[in-house]
Length: 382
Image 1 (tube, one colour):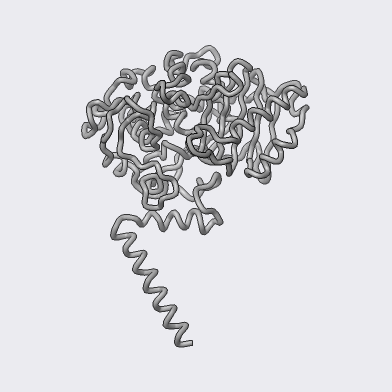
Image 2: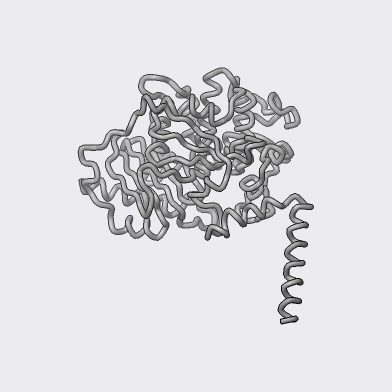
């Protein structure tokens, strides 16, 4: 018993020391990370984690919703066996096929339904870049060439808002998802993302080379906040959520109520049908019900490579030529997709908790191709 009590005292002493060191060296956010993930049975961020954080509401227009029409062949074809196995294996929450602007196939898994909110993760990056296009159209920002230093003077005059949107900032951000001491983990779990972003520096040449950094999108969001004098959620609501007739309010995770900054590089909690409308908006080059929300030239820039040596990324959208088709899509870290194939008027939406990991220099996850393949197999059966 004495040995056990001695061990217990030693263990508690070490634990207290570790906690104290975390606070001393400003790594106390790791404790929140442990609480949010491991104590909820997860090893990393997950699609249902928004209740664990402060959130700001993105308001829909409840008086004028614009629901997706359902195809006359709605759910007339079942998912292929291969698709069902993949969706089960990867813990899919929602899978939709939208053909000719109508929902042709729709299925939800486990406890999820048409109204379930799940985390967008990095699909939010596409939304933020779209907000940049809206801010340019609204006159808040002059063009993609406007320097970030007009809003935050501490940044290199060469750095433009377009560099942030095209992932070519040269900022010293470390895009490491599984390092608990890294900037990405701190951005996700700490309570003041503003300080983290404003302490970044331009260490490379802006506008020259693609390098995917979540810090780019967060700084762009802070520029939008400064330029519009509105919260990001408010501007998203009036710019897209209401004009697109989203079916439900959404939530955008904040770093904290005190700081009040949206985690703009990720973390919009919404449903599959509403996420899909961004695919339609981009496919229509920023037009919606006869109203021009974004300049077509800006949307075309989003859908085309920003750099010849990075043909897989434009401005906020991932790009592919799979099946010799021009494809653009929104993407989240756990296999969140809004995939648009314009020539076939096709949108594929997948939300869930897992994906097939890329290997080596692969730019698109294997499940991305699988979802497209299986969707076409189903469409051929109609």
